[in-house]
Length: 277
Ligand SMILES: Nc1ncnc2c1ncn2[C@@H]1O[C@H](COP(=O)(O)OP(=O)(O)OP(=O)(O)O)[C@@H](O)[C@H]1O
Ligand SMILES: [Mg+2]
Image (tube, rainbow, N blue to C red; front, top):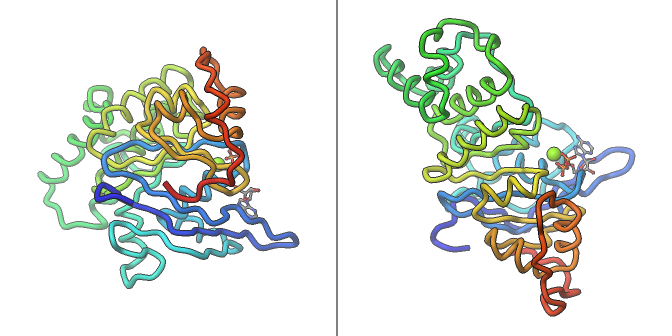
């Protein structure tokens, strides 16, 4: 952990109970730096979404989820706090894979959270709606139809609307779970451009299945495997000089563009997974 840490987990363990208990996260300690975009990668079922949701206690929606360990938002332990849950979820926003507009106008989709959390005049709300629609590069496309239903926008536009809605309550951290995977290539590119701009100002934690997207967007990358943190480093080191054999294999198997920088044998170790960085 450094002074730049925005949010971190400490020995986090999440188990889904049932006929057969599933340990989705097994002692994960990792720090996410302020104003950086960190990509979480790993095979399907390795615990990426569980880790993301545990950062704002969203996994608690699943009644069979049990958690051990802690998450610190700044200095505050979010599982051991008197702060109301809606406030934690305002401070740590979540954008899901499948974008869904609220059954409200475009304007009110953005203003929704602000209306609940704050006391704004109409003029202040107008400013806020414009500011956040501009931030997600949607303003020019919708400024003449703000009273139309949000649901009438295209899927890619709705994903940017969801981003605007999350940002309008001024979160400290933004969690994005495969936010481009349900989109056509052009919409995905627009959402990527938006994230690229936002990462200057926000701490973003993003799950992605695309190594190319992680390379393009992320400052840091963490790799999970079977609920354990295997590797965490800056993006360049991660892709050019991965420290663990398992990371190398995963990256090689999932990279569409050239990955010819064969790391040296010494770079690969048989050490157990790193549990912190
Ligand atoms: N509600 C649940 N009940 C039982 N098991 C669950 C539940 N949610 C997730 N799991 C299990 O926990 C593990 C981690 O799931 P998680 O959704 O975090 O993985 P993921 O890395 O996001 O996968 P994907 O890439 O497919 O989205 C998996 O084995 C999954 O089957
Ligand atoms: Mg997932």
